Length: 322
Image 1 (spheres, rainbow, N blue to C red):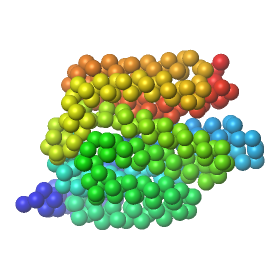
Image 2 (cartoon, rainbow, N blue to C red):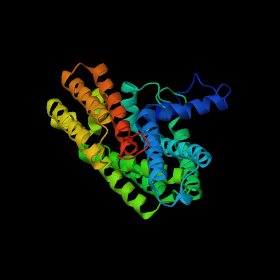
Image 3 (cartoon, rainbow, N blue to C red):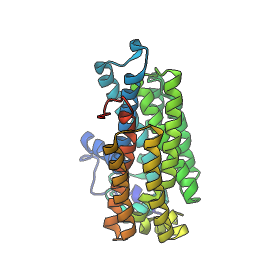
Image 4 (tube, rainbow, N blue to C red):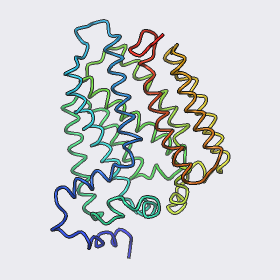
């Protein structure tokens, strides 16, 4: 019997009677739980910082965002990010290979925990896609939404996640860039001047390069699950040592390059970014096992978020203390 079929009949301890609305809401949150620190928090910071940067430096004060408007659109932005994350997570987690991996690495996820069946997950996915795209149309973020749906299709349905680490990292980089693009668009209400659009495009491209070359920080803690599903990750394809040295090199490189992009003169924050990068590098080379590698991934998320904060520390910026 296939794993999909087993899961379709494997929800015996959760009867229709005790699967309440609260139960289903919790299941939806569990789909996205792992990516709150990798997507929701960093991309929210990315969007808020770009909105504050635009408010600080746009010459036409009539177009600047008010606090009340920003607060209202903040709720829209969080909703937009979470709905699209839910689409990505359900699309990924309902695949047979993901079920095998999650049974090893994340048995608490809704499908492997038997909270709902694969058939129910796919029905939820179809509904969530329609809701996400429709909401995006009214929030002036239709293009980021559609672009993200295409990338999710490439990553999951066309197995872009398994053909090789560079393709996988490239799709991850493009996907996270779309999350950031959409979040900024929603937060600003689609009102961006040409200078802001150009800056956002260049910054997204640079961050895509950062993600492309360093996101394999997540792979070291998941080696067992990746082996089980036959995924070609950096450590499994190029070897553990080479992958670790590559991560160290690029983390240090981007810790130096990104502050230069924003012309940061605040030495304290520049050194903080580099300091976190060096801590990541040290833990990567220690090779202290799964627990240490999990900390590497958590610190990578912190480091990426700090990079997203850089626009606030530009000369004359909101947090330029010098």
